Image (cartoon, rainbow, N blue to C red; front, side):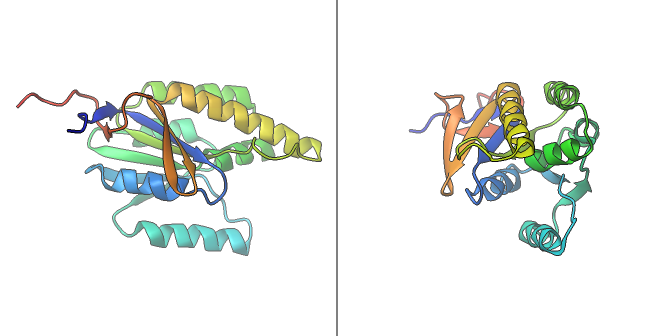
Length: 192
């Protein structure tokens, strides 16, 4: 007999490039039974990125509501998270990159995002890249980005109820450790 599902309000899914994190998050959202909204942080600055965005949209299908928000993520999250709905933020890495290119105050924006997560009115899933497992980057900007990404991932892992790392398409649940059966919701299962 498997354990009863543990309700979670927020989940952080991270992993390396092509690890399956976006697909895993999409499937979680689609099987939640809630109305899905994607907060997309990507910007199509070139043809290749435009093709990636189009491919992701086709994979999601027509049942999704899409909100494009490359910078004001905390505001979009506060606006979009609601009872009966579920938000997928894909991805925190591109959001961070957008902020760095604008020379924004990363600590301030991260704090705003963590405050928004603490006040979620409905469940949310956050996708991010793991960038700290490779060699030390050769230039200062790349090192600064890698360090900022590591700090953002740590903050997301602390703020979210559940954390899952994806490796080769396989989810490795890191938080909570003793609860492998997760479901979205805020109330304990009813005793009916």
